[in-house]
Length: 130
Image 1 (cartoon, rainbow, N blue to C red):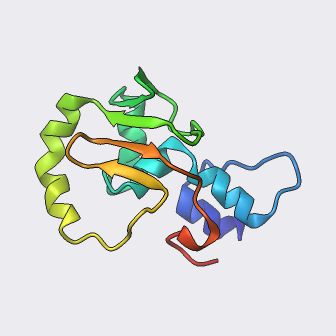
Image 2: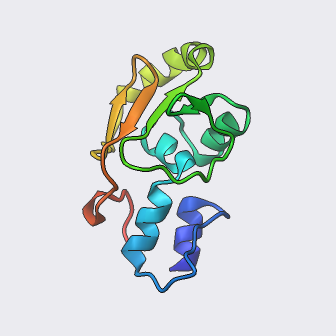
């Protein structure tokens, strides 16, 4: 299971020191900033989300966030740097015409490049099978 989770979340997998069940472990990783940017489909890969965060193009609650592994709380507002977002909007708009996965725990505004974490993902909302 650990190999599968590493393939989904990359080399950085949040592992709590407490005894934790599998779904709680997944829920913790699904609240990471890089994962949420990827799930919002604003970025096509975790790597591209990671790069945008590390270069200061992502704001969390109005402040630049450089930590891709930052766990977000419900109600967090995530916004892309306007210049960065406008430069890549045409590619994003074309991609959304063929979107297959809908992220119900995020309120996404593709016109402004922002989204709000409404709730933590539930067991049936993960886009992969365990």
